[in-house]
Length: 84
Image 1 (tube, helix red, strand yellow):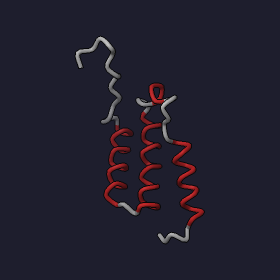
Image 2 (cartoon, one colour):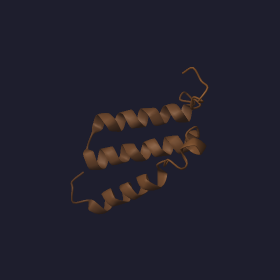
Image 3 (cartoon, helix red, strand yellow):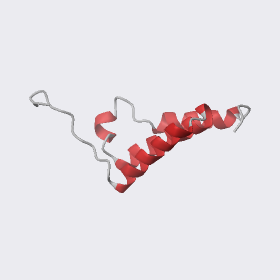
């Protein structure tokens, strides 16, 4: 992809901004496999189109697949009383 495709890059960035889980929604959505997978796929698309970073693109996509297959699961945050 060449850098003259600025409109495609802007669309990918807008999509990524819509799909990323912000700090306000993190505790509510961090364990939702569809949300996490979509966020990772969007990040992979940005890595591919903007950075042309194939390795990170693959890593994001592989993590997304793990979320969809149920391999990745959310672990609760440790409580103040936790020994972790």
